[in-house]
Every structure is written in C-alpha cells, then in structure tokens.
Length: 331
Ligand code: TXA
Ligand code: MG
Image 1 (spheres, rainbow, N blue to C red):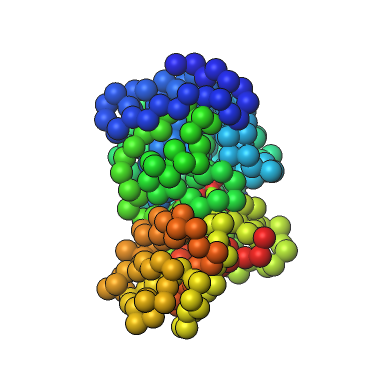
Image 2: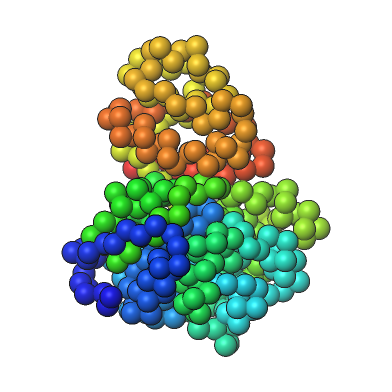
C-alpha cells in the first residue's frame, strides 16, 4: 500500500467502487503519503495529505503543474476548518449557509493550522472546503486530517466528472481512484476570498453571486485586474480541449461539432460533425453537470472545432460561461 514510485509516472493505479473497503483503502493511501482520486459533488479531486509537503509535491508532479498554485484543502466540518483558518463574520455566515457543499473559502491561515506551506503555495491564506459528497466526506473523516485536492486532471485539461475521465488523465500517476459515479454539480466550487473587508468572488461556481450577497447582505468586492488577489490557477487558458472552441454561435459551419443549449442550434444539427445538447430543457444546473463530459466527448470525436450555443449568464450560468471562455482562450 505504500506509494512506490516518486516520479509522476509508473504507479499502479487501483480502481475501486465506492464502499467501505474503498474508504479504508483511500485513508490508508493518504496516511502513506500517496495520491487518491475521489469523487466530490463538483468534480473528481486528486487528494493527498495536506499536512505533508512531500505528499502535496506528488500532486503537482502527477498533474504536471508548471507552477505551485495554491490548492484547496478539504476538511470534514466547520470545526475542522476553523482549526486551519481564521473566519470573520462573513466567512462564518457563508460556511453556515453553504457547507457542506460546492463552495471554497479563502481565509487567513490560523496559527494552529496544519496545512503545509506548499499546499498554500507559501501564502498566509488557506483555501478550505467541506465537500458534501458522501465518499469525499467519509474519506476525509476516516483520514482525520485535511486533504489537499485539485481537480484530478493533467494541468490545463478538462476537469474530470467521472472515474473514467480520471483514469484517462492519471492512470499510472496516482495510487487509487474511487469510483463514486458522475459528479452532480459538474463544475469546480465557487471560490470566495474572505481575507478582506468584504468578500470577493475569485471563481464563479454553482453557489452564485446572488446566493453569496443574500447571505452576507453586502455587495461582493470587485477584484482589481492585476491586483494582489487572484486565484492563480484561474488565469489564461484552462479547461482546454484539443479542439478549438467557438462561443455564442448562432450559425454553425460544416466542419464543426456542436454543443447546444435548449435546442437553439438543433435545426442546423444535420450540418454538424457531432451534436450534443447541454440541456434540451434549458436547465442551467443540468447544463453545468453535463459541460465537461460533453466537451470531452465532442473532443474525442476528433473534430477540429467545437461550436457552442449561447448560454444564459444568470445563476450558475456565470460559471458555465467562465469555464467556456477559458476553454476558448488562445493557447
Ligand atoms: O470543486 C473544486 O474546488 C475542486 C474539488 C476537487 O474540490 N477542486 C479544485 O481545486 O478545483 P483546484 O486546485 O483545481 O483549484 C484551486 C483554486 C485555484 O484556482 C487556486 O488558485 C485557488 O483555488 N486558491 C487556492 N488557495 C488560494 C489562496 N490562498 N488564495 C487565492 N486562491 C487560492
Ligand atoms: Mg483544476
């Protein structure tokens, strides 16, 4: 059970169905300093012992991350989160409203905190999340320490929302993949910076701008471009398929594969190289859950370009458009 290879590659990756045995195996791998891919309600995460610099270094190695972006540390509950970070009134209100769930809070690291400097990329803040997914929760509870986990994909690629995606990305690069089925939300967590006077939205997600402002009773602070507060992993091209991506399309071109919404481009589907609809019934939550899987499937069709229908921007639509803009960014 101990991790053998110390380079990114050449590990034997076990795939186990979620269950008591898999939970125990996952906790054992984490104790041994190894890597476990776990289902969460957002996307699959590549987990390691957040308190061990050596274990966290393996995450960067396995993902082939070019730089040491700070990682999210996953904990079992608010009490555990408060041992790691300092919560002001807004952070507390948000935690009580949305945890366990698809929201990450960036707060000042607590003096008592155990998350290692590498997981924080040397910052004096820490990103914390209490996931709602029962498998993630049970593994964290069984392990008993924070679990650092970025999305379980190679750096710069589409986040995995199914165990099969993780195997495509990381087979041979992690010790265990726990298969807990498809992720319900399908987009990475909303990240909120709570280190200042008013919270700031670092990454949109299924907990929307409106949800956050309702709970705190104040407007989200705007992030000054080029300012000190950024979510470093969020810049430039990210979530990238191999195919080029064209957004807000109303007229498709013959070579293109189509990612539709609400059947808007359905009449032109005959011309399309491949055709999938994120949500024929225009349900943004369904669209979010399907987004990464459908991008992956269209990409696998071998198409050179994916044309995407316009997606409304309200609620979780902001996060869907954010991820699509990154998939379409020049690279
Ligand atoms: O849904 C999710 O959040 C998934 C699942 C596995 O929980 N995790 C995930 O982690 O998306 P990752 O590492 O791919 O994204 C972490 C983001 C990065 O953009 C990083 O820059 C930001 O969180 N972040 C982490 N710590 C931070 C900090 N102290 N200050 C600012 N941003 C931080
Ligand atoms: Mg990621």
